[in-house]
Every structure is written in C-alpha cells, then in structure tokens.
Length: 544
Image 1 (cartoon, rainbow, N blue to C red):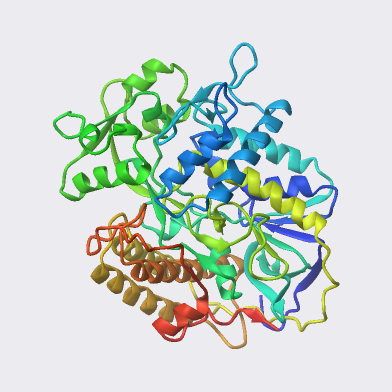
Image 2: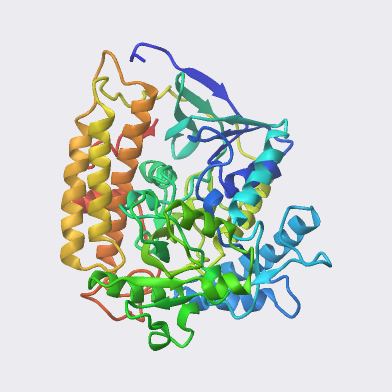
C-alpha cells in the first residue's frame, strides 16, 4: 500500500460493524434492506457471543414474569440501572426468546418441547434458556450465521478492520476500513456499531483476541457521548491456567450446585453473602480475588453440578481436558478475569447515539440496563433485544440524502513497523490496565496506569509516516488495535479516577463505601483531552 494509491469507495444503505449476536440480529432483521456487514474476523460468527457458555435470561417459565426479571436486574445493578430500560429489556426479551423458540432454534428442551430452564446467580427464579448445554452462544450464533449467509440482502465483508467514522457537520456519512486488499471508504447514511466489548484490553480476560474495544474507540474519536466506562465486570470463575484468553467456567455450574472452596477445602461464600455461590458476580469475584491476591488458591468443585446435570456441560469438560485437568477427580483452580463491560456508547431505547446516523447495540452500547453490575445471562438477551430494536429504528427512520464531503485521508502507518513492536506495546498496555484498573483499584494505581498508558500512546503515535510506503493491511490492523486498546484503557482509567466510591463492579480500596448521591456519568473524548493533555493520534478522526 502506498499513500498515492486511491482507495475504493463503496456505497451502502446500512453498515453493520461486528459479527456477534447483536450485529447479526440487526442485519437479519433489516432484510430486505441492503446491508453491508463488516467484521475483522476471518468469517462468521465472531466476537464474544461465540464463547458464551451461559444461556439467555428470559421470563418464559411457568409463574415467572418480566417484572420479576426486571427487579432482579435492578437489584444486581447496584443502584445505577435505568428501571424503565430494565423493564423494556425483560419484556421485549421474553418476546424475543419465545419467537426464537417458535422459530425452531436449537434450544435445549424437555420431552414436551418446553425449554429447559436453569438458575444463575442473583436470579430469583430458574429462567436461563440454554442451547447445547453450556454452548449456548456457539449454538445460537452458528445458527444465525447460517441464516445470514442465506440472506441475499446482506453482504458480508470479512477480514475488514473498521478504523474511523466519516462525519460532516456532526452527521455520520460512512466508515473508513482497511481490507485485505487495501483501504475502503464505505459511504452510507446509517452505521450500526455492534463490535462487542473491551476484555482484550486487559492482561487476563475471558474474551477472544478480537475484543479490543474497537467500536468504543471509533465512537469516542468521532465525539460520541460515552457513559459508565469504569464498570468492568470480572467473571469470578475463570480457570486459573496459563492461557490467553483464559477459559471460562460458566456461572451455570454454580447454579447447578458447584461449590467454591478455599485451599483447606472449605466453603467460604456462605460467610460472604446470604446467597453464597449464587451472590452477584462482583461479590463472588472479590471474595475469590482477595484470596488469590493473598497467595491462596481457590477451587470450584464441579462434581455436584456434573452429577446434577449429566451431559450438561460438554464445553467445560472439554476445556478442562484441554489443560490436563479432570473435574471428576478434583476441584478446579479458579481466579477472576475481565469479562464484560457495562459501560459504552450512550444510546436510547432504539440504539440511537448522540451522533446522527450512528446506532449501537450489544456490549459496545450503554443502554442503562446493566448499571454497575450486569445480571448473569442478560448479555445475550441485550444483544437480541437491542439488535432487533436498532434494526426497526434504522428501517423506519428517514434520513436526508448524504451531503457532499471530502474523501478522508487514511492514517499512515510506517511500513517498517513490525508485529513484535506492536505486540510489545499492546502487552504493556494490557498489563498496565489490569494492574491499575483491575478487580480492586485505588487512586495511586490508577494514576500510575494513566501515566503508563499516556506514554505508550505517545510512542505508538510516532509509528506513522507522512508520505511514501505505508504498512500492509495486517500491520495496519495491529497498529489500529493497539491504538484502540490504549484509548479505551485511558478512558476507563479516567472514569475510574472520577468515581470516588465503591459500587458494583467498581471497587476503590481508598473509597470503600458507596456514595448515595452517585449517578451514571457521561463523558466524551474532549474531557479526556482536557485532563490528560493532547491525545496523540486520537484526535485525528475524520471530521470533515
């Protein structure tokens, strides 16, 4: 690639960025409108949805009500859940799951055809719908991917790395992306971000490698309103092995009777919370994290769950076997790992962001349904509900024709930048964020993380060229992911410093009590620039 090489310009009616459950749901429900779905993965499906072992929470069982599900959602969110949005999620969610059941998707069912329902932490009823035992995400998104491939109105562009939005006068006019063959400007009046979470910005995570916060960073550079970025959920029971990402031991195990044990083989969760192993995730994660930080091992005894649900956890058994562990013989070592981001791009009930022409759904969005701590198995539900709502709003909302705008200049990455250097910057950034803004935080650690991330961002920005040969698409993607990791990390640290209290997944050892007056907090990239000085590279989004 050279800077003198013209890039392709492709027109689209709607662009969807992301190939997880939210993105595929939106693309499918937009049919027969013409949709271009862009994903940086090599194929469908992608993202964290594929690895979701837990099921989908929905009030579809006898005697259960969406209102009860909403109450559990509000309670888990530690005072920051938007009650109206929680009611919408659980009401629409029950309808969406019933639709999928009626549509024949491969959920686990009883002999009479009714869904088999499990119970997970902080739920007052058994309302978790599963597919393939503990392979719900994989089963569901694989089925949707097959339908997407058979939908002629959807064009799927794989190995395509979304870099920046293109705007004119605050309106989204398209998306600049780096494909395998070079740069492409996707010119479109409607863009839907469904890029998932930020787990891979942390050194220890259950998320796949592609979860580098791309959509959040793209929206931030474009000036979109963001919220609740400090709230990062750490899953309590990731397998304590040397792997990246670390394997997840689903919450459904504890719902089926698995027990947490200390190094003496004693249960400790009954002393931590009345719900013991079924306490909210933040409570369980910190109880385990304190022991791990003190040099102790913590174990999850799967045997009660495996006996209660024979054949119910094939994914977990395969993961344990892959690491040479036998859960039938002994308890499994566990430790918390970064898992889910409650914050994101601020949207309304229809997924509209603060920028005209931009929608967001799934984990990249902040709808207010999770507050400070997401209720177990509400993530796939959120993707289904808001993917569908975004599709309806995009289809129904008229927009004026695109105004004329100048073609943006792609960021120029130096041709001699290698994988090793970019990987080293990325690894340092992940470690800095995990150490400074992990499970338990304090002001000094957050400030140290901010200084480190600022220095790394400045170093990354030097790896550009003004003219001449540019890097290959593969290097551009690695550079872009490093840029996104650093920006997201700095935003998370900034938000965590501003919240001087402990609430839900945000725990400050120097501010251990909640502040009753605290509310959800919004910010934009300009606020970060005002506190951390100039933002190398990040301010150079395509505002025309």
